[in-house]
Amino acid sequence: MQFVVGDVLEGKVTGLTSFGAFVEISGGKTGMVHISEVSNSYVKDIKDCLKEGQEVKVKVLSIGNDGKISLSIKRTLEPAPQQERKPRVNRERRPAPAPQQNSGPSSYEWQPKRNENLSFEDMMSRFKQVSDEKMTSLKRGPENSRRTGFSKKNGK
Image (cartoon, rainbow, N blue to C red; front, side, top):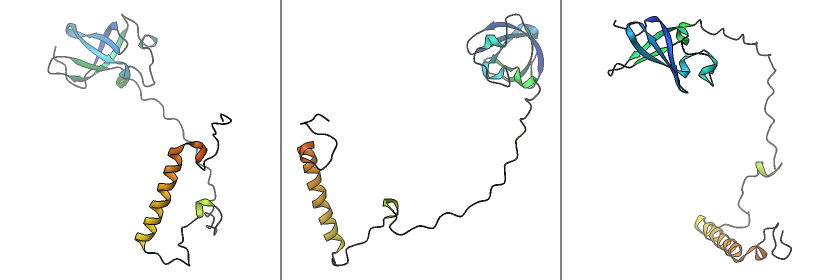
């Protein structure tokens, strides 16, 4: 018997595996139902849904060039009822608070010092010098750095 994609057939479960079930359909052909195609809900263990020898209704999903038949049980079932969505409560939207000047570190904006008229290159040179000094201090060890929280003397 020839099968066409979309056919709905009766079959008998002949084997169960961790990834699906083998179903014998008319004409002595066997197809496979992947575990994701067994039920409308999540299936952890296929043995909770199917048993060998059980009669099932299946839908042909695909037929491979090598003759393998992919089947689905859940596509023959009634669609799962949609859960009724609760209407959202209409909440009043509040405007975002206005940014405050100098209210903390997140609102800090860098401003050059007023008494310095340095060029960009001079500022970068100064930054590099300070950065190198900090890195050298860190490489010498924790007791020479400005970081707190660890000291070889007290072991903390």
